[in-house]
Amino acid sequence: MKKLYYLTGAFLLVFMLVLAPLALSPDAGASEDDASTSGQATVALSKDQDAAAIGDIPFAADSFSRAQVGSNREKDGSYLGYCFYVGSEPGKVSLVSVDGRIYVHIDPQAAEKAGYDLQNPDHQQALMQLLVALDNVNDKGGTPLSADADWVFITKTSYTGNGITLKFDQPLKSGQYYTVITGDDGADISDKTSDRYLNIAFADACVLSPASEVEVTPANQGLEALAEFLSNIDMSPLWITLKTSLTAIVIVFFLGLLAAYFCLRLSPRAQDIADSIFTIPMVLPPTVCGFLLLLAFSRNTPIGQWFIDIGFPLVFSWQATVLAAVVVAFPLMYRSARGAFENLDSNMLDAARTLGWSEAKIFFKLMLPLSWSSIAAGTVLAFARGLGEFGATLFLAGNYLGITRTVPIAIYFEWTNGNIEVAIFWTIVIIIFSFIVILFINLWSRRTTKYRRREGA
Image 1 (cartoon, rainbow, N blue to C red):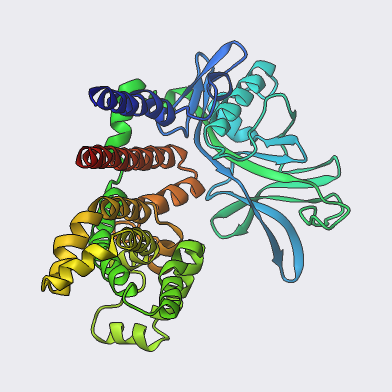
Image 2: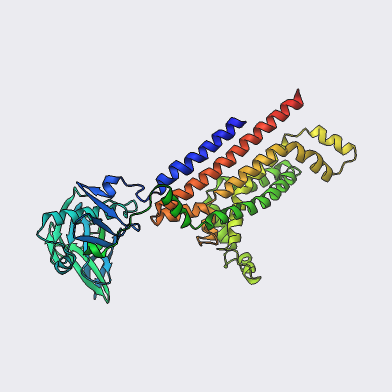
C-alpha cells in the first residue's frame, strides 16, 4: 500500500513541477529559435509579448496586435475590399499575408522618427526578426509568420502587384484605419468559389518607436513564472465545479437509491420501461441532454415560467449547472445501485420478512450494508461524471464567469480565446482530480475484495 501512495505522490509531483512549468512558460508552444531569435541577433520580448527590441538596433516594435480574420466591406453599394482593422491612428507598420507572400507597409515619416533607415538592409532584417518573434508568440494556433517567406516591403499607401491591390491606412470610419485588399481589378479575392481566390491568412500591426522609448521587461522564468501565472488565475471555475459536483452527488445518491429500489418492485414490463427512462441520459450525447433541458425549463414553457414567477429563474443560473450534472450522473448511480440490489440473495430477504422485519428495516439493515461497496463505487463514478460535465451544462447554464463557468467550460473557452496556457492549467487540474477519483475506486475495490475473502475463508 505504501508503494501505491509513493507512486501517487510521484505522479502529482511530475505534473506540478515538470509539465506545469513547461506548459505555462511564456514561450509554450513555440521554440526558442522561432519566438525570440533569428539569425545571430537575439530578440528581447516584453512580459506582455506586445513589444520587442534587438540589442543596439535604434528602433523597436511596440503595441503589437494580430488579426486572424478580416471582413468584406462595401460603401454606397460599391465593394471596398477585404479589410483588416489596424488602429485609431495611421502610421503603424502593417503586415498582411496573402497566398503565402508577406506584404509589409512602413510609413516613411514614422520610420524616420523611430530611427529606421529605409535604405539599410540590416534594419529591414531586424524589423523582420521583430515581427516574426512577436507574431510567433501571438498567433494563437494560427498560421505562423515565417522569415523564409517572400517578403515585400512597401512605403506607399497603395500597392499593386502579384494580382492584388493593397491600400494601407485607409480611414473607412472616423478614427478607424484599415488595410484593404482586393484583386488588381477590384474583385473580391476572399471568395473561395471565385477563380481569383487567394488565401488571406492574417494581418499584423505594430508601432515603430525609438528603442529608448520602449520598455522591454523580460518575462519571469521557471518557478517565478509559474507563481506569477497562478496568482493571476481566476480560481472560480474550480470552486464552482466542486460546489456543483458535491451538491449534485448528494441529490444523485438519494435519487439513484430510490429509483433502483422502487424499480425492482415493479412488474417486469414496467421495469423495462422505467429502466429505459432512467438510463437514457447515459447514452444520449450531453449536448442533446442539455438541449432537452433547455427546452423543458426555458421561459417559454409552463415549468420554466413557474420558476421565473417564484423568483427563481433556473436557466443560466448556478442551479442549472447542478441540474445538468444530476441528469447526466444519475444513470451511473442508478445502474450501480440496481445491479447491487439484484445480486442480493432473495431467500435472505424473504427470511427477514418471515421474522417480521419491515421493508424499511430490510432496506437499511440488509440491502444497504450488503450492497455498499457497489453503491460507493457508483457514487464515486457519478461524482466524476458530474465533475467533467460540459455539453449539458453549457446548453442549460451557459458560460458566466463566477456563476456557471465550470472547469470543462473554462478549458474550452480559454482555448478558443487563445489562452492556451490557462487551458493547459485547467486540463492538468481535471486530470489530477480524475486520477484521484480512479485511485479511490481502486483502493475501495481492493479493500472490499480482501474483506470478502476473509469472510469466505
